[in-house]
Length: 103
Image (cartoon, rainbow, N blue to C red; front, side, top):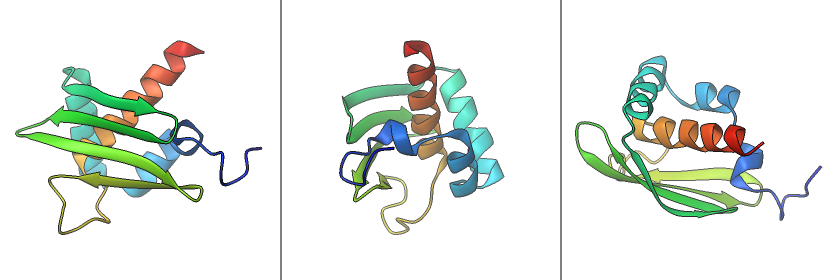
C-alpha cells in the first residue's frame, strides 16, 4: 500500500469513486463524451493530468493529488469547485480506460 505522499492519480481513480462524486446525469454525459472520443490529454504524469474535453463547449479539466486525495478543476465549474461535472467524468473514465489497456 502506498503512503499518502506517493499515491498517484491512478491509485485514486476508480469507477466507484467516479459514481460517488458525479450525479447520475453527469456520469451518463461523461460516458457519452468519452465514447465519441472528445478527450484530448495535454499533460499526463503520476500526480497531475490535464485534458481538453469537448462536450457542448471545449473545457479544460485538471486532476492532481494533494496529500493522498484527488483534487480537480474544470473550467465549467470555476464557481462550484466541488462539482464533479461531465467533463471530469469523461477525463476520469479516459484514465481508467488507458490504465486497463496498459495492464
